[in-house]
Length: 436
Ligand code: UGA
Image 1 (cartoon, rainbow, N blue to C red):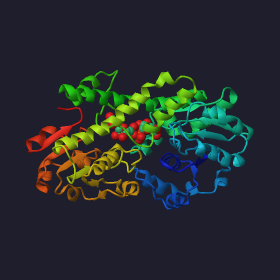
Image 2: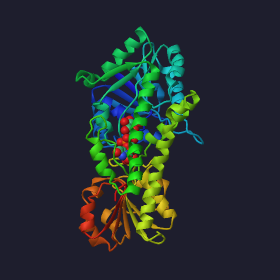
Image 3: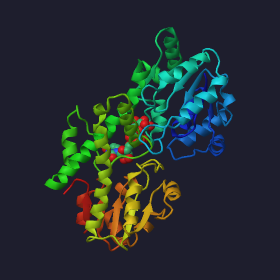
Image 4: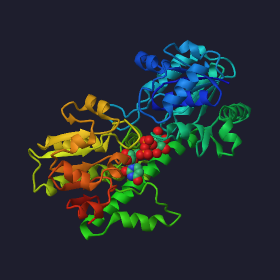
């Protein structure tokens, strides 16, 4: 099928390349010429495992192209909207400027029977508001939320755990559903659940999924706070409750909390939308989820201060990680980078290392020192602070090696990823999150 993808950020670029890799003819469209130039050369504008390969494969097969010219969308049967919906400046709600601009730009190029598939995360009610404009152009609007995780984006797009389509009622919706099934043919053929709903449900599925994940993380971090005043160990607690299949162990990783371009802004936008709908109280707990999450950064900083005898002024502190999570170079709302910046603000001599995110981190926080080589970064550190659980730090950094690089013996584990016993046995003072 011929497809267009409007917006070539994390979501759109991966979607375009993934759709080409399953056999479609795809044009990716973005207003940013630099992004389009890179993508056209088969270069991923961000670090995402497997993306580079399918970009190159798609471009050399002739099935995948990129352009800044929105008229290239003409002739495609399905047009995906994958632009960003950031937190609005000065508020918590989602900023829909880019979604509106994408629809406006696309309208003149639509033909009768085209499907416009919104993938961006939007406040509930957005699709119903946009639909009349799309219908007037002879096309059908569907909302087809995306659940990909950074770091696993290619796999999540080609082989998702479910597909959701919010469609209009009646024959128009049925036809659009059939077209979407054809788009996602490999997943549909293997029996991936394909849930057809109305617009509002599809929009809510997305935001409620992210709200649930954020709540699960803040729940375990709240337990970490209680563990900290009782001497309990939150990692054992998570293991124990996680064995209950109704609870499950995933997303019960206590630490410095969630960040990134999705969870933080999505829970805020959801709370703001609920207020607008007169149902603020229904999700008022999301404010608490946010507050718990942000407190964990304070906690990590306080652990470093306490471990270094009450002050970090002029202390050499090595921060392992800048990305908001491993397998990503994304530093948007990164708790890792925030911890580094706070320590710097308190007077520490901070060195930050990360296998992928240094360039992005330096762009937003040029005041910090960055060293790519992990061992160089650790040399002479008074304290090591693990904030992104890359394998390089979590699995592959032996305490004996760290001991050879520095005489400092303080390690603060902001992700509870290290083997506490091994570090203690090697003579280090180990501090975890919610652990004795
Ligand atoms: C999240 C959702 O997981 C995706 O399903 C969704 O499609 C995406 O947002 C989106 O809306 O686009 P992502 O932002 O890539 O995906 O990251 P997650 O894997 O959800 O991790 C979010 C944050 O939570 C990270 O900072 C991670 O370190 C933290 N986290 C995760 C914890 O602190 N503890 C855990 O146990 C798990």
